[in-house]
Length: 271
Length: 287
Image 1 (tube, rainbow over the protein chains, first blue to last red):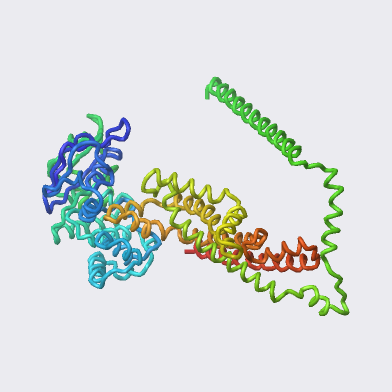
Image 2: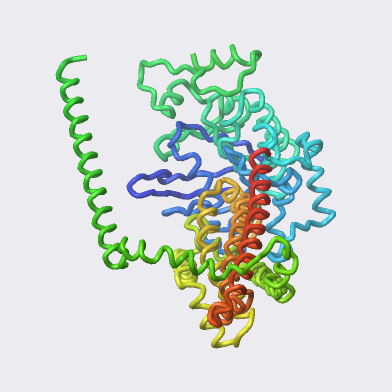
């Protein structure tokens, strides 16, 4: 179980994340929604310590993550795999190497520099590539792939880390609707089949409703909603997206995933 | 649009123009003062120039031997009597440059990661790396060569070291600046998966900057061949030693022969390196 207790992060005068407390059950698929600048990305980076907290505590199964240093911190980062809006692959390396890199934290520094990985690791890489339907592209350079494919490579790399939790920072914000659905489907099947906990930032409502079993709404660094997708009422949505009372919130402006079958249902939900 | 808006716009536009004109005038003034000042201090006197120019031709003329068409082979053989020895020295010069480029670039490769703001592990590492490479490239390489000759004796070794140290300083700066222009997304990706600093440099940075580095290293080799050719002036190996001996002993024909050899070699290396560099950049642009 991942536990955040009164976690804040200030950049100068701005509190990007302001006193957030939160617990995430193992095996859940949690969506974090909110406008740009609501603190979603910072929240995720506070968990794997790409951003240091100004105050508060993050712990995982009782281990105080905020106190980790050096090697222990790197091992925690390996266990809390992250995928990014811009994929953050190494563009000039081939797909296979990009995936194998996920094992780096298990290697001693000097030998790892020669880009040698064990046969077991290569098998693992091919398995995770296969799971994401990318085996055919294994020897292509990462920058020759489409955005959706690159994001799936990033997921394959994350799987190589043998993670306990997956932090997904706007994984579909740079993708077209079809690729976005494909990436979210991959995350969902990994969550269901392997029971991997997923904490996923999304700035759109429909994706959150469709894939997450719990939704956290953030506004101005604070949690303003925490509940099941069904509990996300129009009033709650207004609060998350700062829409003044009486003004209509069109779901379409916060939508990335388009599925004709689901569309009417979603429209009803926010009407 | 109301008239007042236009008037305000016109006024601020005129102000901007005035400010720009003032800057231009100031810049010109500064230029003239600097030019006049340096001409006076540097004894840059047109009269001296006119007076001395013919002597230039005279000196060159004196170094050139008589080459007759009907005795071309014999005359050339006489002129370039030292060719075997000079070619040996030319090869030594190129190898000096090669070794120095390798050593200096290897050092610059290491120091470059510390000397770039976005990658350095700590601010003091950044400043140390920048200051060290600054020092290494501001001290003239002939001065380094003199020091190394004093320490290690005459021969190519001090020359190689001097050029290597200078290359480290110059390329250290270039590499660090190339590093500062990389895409940081892969770096974040590597940090997030638990890679340490060295691994992050290896997998997120090196693949991005390698083509740039290759181009800089080739360019440095061109420069280093030229530098290696004069290292002999202070006894630090290469063809320069032979040249300076010829100049001091007034062996005029040797001077011209050696100079022609140096110019030919340096040009060949320049052309070769440039071709290689363009091939590299061209291939990069296509992929």
